[in-house]
Amino acid sequence: MSTTRPGIEVRLENLSRRYAGVTALDGLNLTMAPGELVALLGPSGCGKTTALRLVAGLEDADGGRVVIGGQDVTNVPANKREIGMVFQAYSLFPHMTAMQNVEFGMQLHEVGVAERRKRAVDMLELVGLSAHVNKYANQMSGGQQQRVALARALAIEPKVLLLDEPLSALDARVRARLRDEIRRVQLEVGTTTLFVTHDQEEALAIADRVGVMNAGHIEQLGPPTTIYSRPATPFVAEFVGLTNRLAGVVKGGEVEVRGKRLPLVKPDSTDGPAIALVRPEAVSVAVDADVSAGPLTGSVISTVFLGATSRVTVDLGDITVLAQMPTSDVGAITTGTKVRLSLRTDPVLIARDEKAATEA
Amino acid sequence: MIKGRRAKLQVFRVAAFLLFGAFFIAPIYGMFEFSTRGNGVNAARTLDNWKAIGTYPDMVAGIVASLQLAAITSIAVLVVLVPTMVWVRLRLPRLRRVIELISLLPLTIPAIVLVVGFWPMYQWLGNNVSDSILTLSFAYAILVLPYAYRALDAGLGAIDIKTLSEAARSLGAGWPTVMWRVIVPNISSALLNAALLSVALVLGEYTIANNLLYPNLQVSLVSLGRTNAGVSIAVAVASLLFAFALLIAISFVGRPRRMRSEVA
Image (cartoon, rainbow over all chains, first blue to last red; front, side):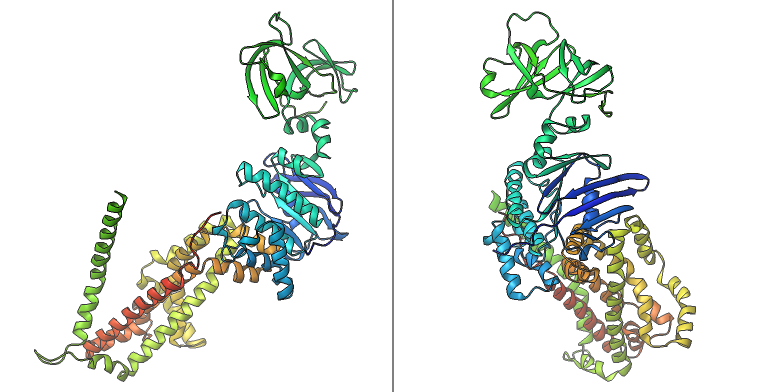
């Protein structure tokens, strides 16, 4: 099978973009290693799609540079950048078959007929659509269309592959399957890839590194495990995964939460009231029929079966707390069960205001 | 139950088709009958009027001029309107309402008022550029603008023009390629509809041509009708049949090549 060219380094240097007074990108910096898959993750309006469109050349930057393979392409038009892109909306040309769609870009790059056909067949085989080469877009499902779009983008042997929420229009089962397939294909061809999504599960599952974006800049960039287990800011902690917000008091490099002292990720935080951000898996639940009134005792509101784990919601009187535990440990815990919670002494992040907008 | 409902629907369809068919055919039949009458009360049917069309050089010139005008106007309107509408949708969406308003404006102005505006322009054109009847295509392009705009707007609204053009651009297509190989094939029905409306309007136009003193098909028809009503009606029937034939041809050409047959 024909493969794409070796991965190329991509650098976004101090990129900025404003729309009618609103800052979409605020000095974004990102360096992608050759062959790396970086996911930009963030809520709507955080600037992740804008960043991707600036790399593609579909929009012009107000400031900064896009450097691909050492070449400054900031002012190069989109059709000269040699970039493959898969869009959120279905983008197959409706008047062409799957095969013709994949051949389209190669035709424009003046690839010979025989080579073009061979590469198109290879690419469609790579995405598992050998049996659908002569189908039109309206004869294929959403997942199949996106796979053809992926094959079409890769067929031109792009320097960079850009994926703009390609799975968001698909149902959950197809989404999970196609997500794995995209990763398999990306690893096979080795193209440097920028993947934009608002789905944290998708980003954590697929990427070599995840960049969590907020208000036009990257709050934290790192491997998925680091992003999840060692969030650098309250925003990241709250956006990636579920988080309990527990009121406490910072004192001497620790935060006291409901009678329990927890170490801080940043021990030099100033003393005073704060909100501790505690992951549900750092909360354990013990059944205690003889529950006397205490800061970490309460009754179960609900249990949600998630497969290998279950999520238990406990009412402590003034606040509800989420705990995640192995399903095998749930046992007799049901709605109304009196329980006692304990907090694991992992280092925690704190937020100073109600919205967790500021960092400790 | 369902079978019975389908049969009823089929009967309704056939009845509606016959009714509307009669509505259109009856006047044409009347015209055809008139154009094939022989001289005298019990005279046999004759095609003399039809055969005589070619013997009126002014009539032939009018027909040729109108066909040329129809072709030029259709092409000119499409060439100007399609790229403009695509560009406005992609880059200047805020101007869409303005363009729509400008395009629909000719609908609100009576043809005779347009003539008053065109008159000095055509006087200048006649003195300085050309007094050919084909210059009427400028006026006709404005006249057909609202109809062509509506047809094209519906076609462009049916496809995701932004995503398709961005996908093509990312694959290496310049703007001409995007237009010619991606957008045009996907709005072919709309283009044909716009062209048909333009042709039909130009073939039937009388007021502007007559007042600007250009002998197009309709002006020649009226003129001939004063001396030989039979030939005049024969030409009118022929032009109507031509428009119908064009409509049917276009509806076949514009039919999608593929039908939704399977969704995996």
